[in-house]
Image (cartoon, rainbow, N blue to C red; front, side, top):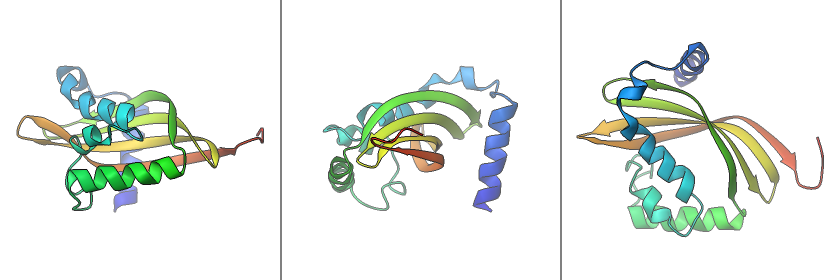
Amino acid sequence: MQRVLLLVTVLVFLIGPSPLWAEDSDILMPVGIFIVYYGTEDMDKVAEVVTEDFRKGKSELEWATTTNRLLRSIKYERLENEIKGQILTEDKATILIRATIRTVAGKVEHDEVYRLIKREDTWLIDDLDVVNEKIKPQGIEI
């Protein structure tokens, strides 16, 4: 079922953006915070814009600390981002970002599918899928 939902999401992205998108720029805020601070010493800011489900029940501090430790161990660095599409309903949103990152494995290009939910008047990231991943190993031109 989740693969069908992902396929439908990607197809909607290809068809075009939702006309509702322009009405609520607050939706981009948590994704922007995630992109800017993920993998930095300010992971606590990321922990504030994701749900407890996203953190797998861990406290904000525990999630930020353990995730940051993991990202440092792989030398995670975000290089580029491009918004490729979005879907918006009254209390849910999906945003597709094309991202380029670097790790010890090399340069990685992939799509990030962010699923957000609205709690009261605040949008939070509830899920993130990484798809269409292409790894270019360091020192090797492909």
